[in-house]
Length: 360
Image (cartoon, rainbow, N blue to C red; front, side):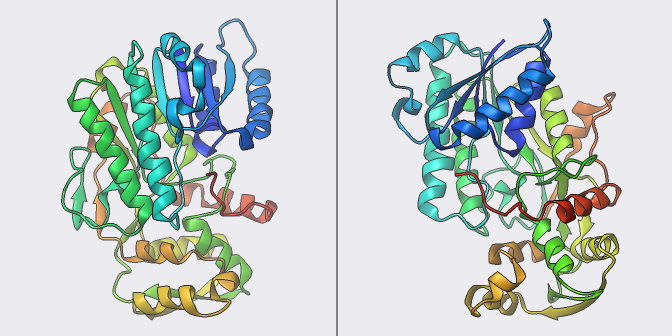
């Protein structure tokens, strides 16, 4: 199988490419020139770890999903002729992304990759979306839901939603595709390894900055809202398995925790893992978010992205029944957050140099 892959050497993409090569697939990765050195180093590690006669290969080509012909120029049609399968992961994974960048990368970029795929003799288009195409949908959101009149927390959600609409429109027209919607992705459940600190890491790092008695501002009346978190290895394992199943064509799989913690429970688990006793200060959301956005030095002091606060009262619950049914009989399942939180904390303590910065 000849795979055309976007999103390498990103957080999920790096691990997923290694798994595809291990199962014998030849993977061509579209890489922006500014990430070429990082991609070459990662590709070399993959080749060292997968170097046997059953393994596939990794090839890097420079390009950009936001450009005409993906920045491939005259090689565009040749790449289409060589491609059997497309994995599209490239996106801006940043809650604070502005609209212009989000539209260019997440929406226009996805449209460009879809156009490329439609010129291939394609077995499958594998697309990584996000559970948060739900926006602030009030209730249980399934893989069958998408256009529900929901409103969105930020331009990240908006543009990922618009991108998935593009994908599902092409699916309705006959494109053989599978959509994967991860929840909030954190590091590996065995090692804690991650590529950037965002999402729950903002709260984790805030706790670590404080003494044994720590203060956490919570959103008034929202402690029962769920915070759905999954480790990278579960997401990759699920995609690897489902992408190899012919009966997964046309389906949408939500890769989420079937029993997520509430915000209040998440604070307790992180407090225990960091050996902190937490003093909660419930405040109106507008006060917490407004302070981070407007009080001089507040964001720098806490290290917390203001957009994160919208998830402290997130009203949506995610249904993964179809995913669990598809993975039944395998050893792929989402572990509970409490089972790997110690690995997360240990990794953060050992790697203070990592930042929340997204690849763009």
